[in-house]
Amino acid sequence: MSELDQSTRDMITSVYEDGAPKIPDAVRDFIEKITFAGPEEILSVLRDVLADDWMALPVWARNLAYRLACLQCPDDPALLREAAADLLCFGPDWDEAAEALKARAAQLES
Image (cartoon, rainbow, N blue to C red; front, side):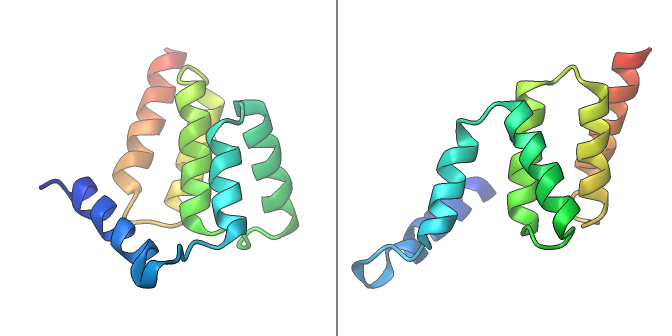
């Protein structure tokens, strides 16, 4: 079983323990909205929220937001570097992914 498979199963179990979902409505709404948001909207919100309070947004939400923006704009070196810089702030768990983003940005510019 892969780590993602196990993590998914653990999440399902934890969310539905005791019968009722345990994900706060605000978290569920954020995930639903960001899933279908365009990159411009995602980046605008990220930049606004982080400018107000750089540590207010949970790391998992930042990672998800940047990942979705990068998936929609895989050839934008400035975005890739911005996402990499954010990942490096919360490493070392994501340092390898950050380095890959920086390498991709450099490759795009050469």
